[in-house]
Amino acid sequence: MTGLAPEHPFVREVLPELAHELITLLEEEGERDLAVRARDLRLVAECGCGDDSCQSFYTAARPADEPYGPDHRCVPLLPERGELILDVADGRIVYVEVLHRRPLRVHRP
Image 1: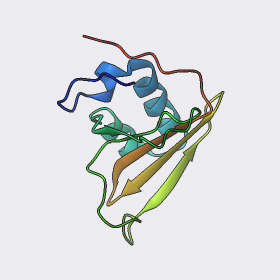
Image 2: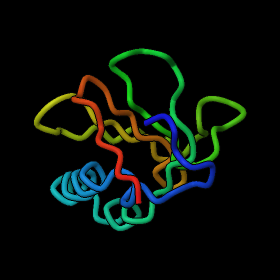
Image 3: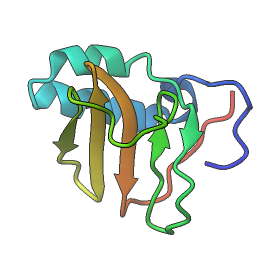
Image 4: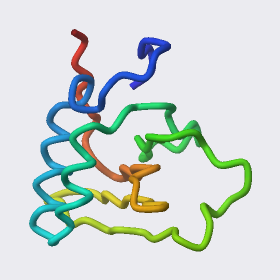
């Protein structure tokens, strides 16, 4: 995912397959509010951990203090391959954990 434009692009524009998958999985899990919010996620920053199996990214500014606070929850999704786990704070998706999956195809508009 490196080499993204400095502004915060919509995930649906840069990673359309992943965005579609997130929305579909959230709807299947009964997380309709999050599915609606997932349509407008922005790619704010890559995880940066350096792990080869990690393609995770922030969709909001990284918090100064971990964890995200008392309203934080994790939403594990069940994709066909790998792991997708969302960090949700105050009803917003703030981090998308993408692990052990084939490399994401970045769409360059």
